[in-house]
Image (cartoon, rainbow, N blue to C red; front, side, top):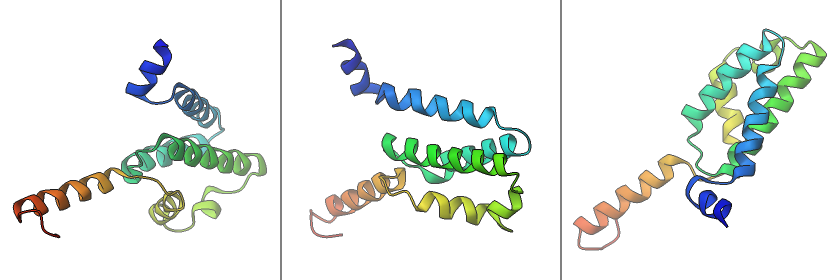
Length: 122
């Protein structure tokens, strides 16, 4: 009963456990994969703005799988990300649909304009 109440406030405990496992997997990667993987994870958190826990966990899990495979095969980092790491990160993140923070702000802005306009379409 308490766990369900906590999850209602903070999100799925299983998602948090999976997130921590994936973070630990990236931490365990040999260099340069570990430090590069951590840099991408940080970028995903800032750029992606995904609010859906399932989407975040899936995206980071898939990314970790990719990085582990690259480390195992000895694939050079540049061969994976190409010449523009930002483009790689944003393309990777865009492949994962989900509600993003900006979606909430867009809805809030639209509602504010509608309210100011007497409730008509924005």
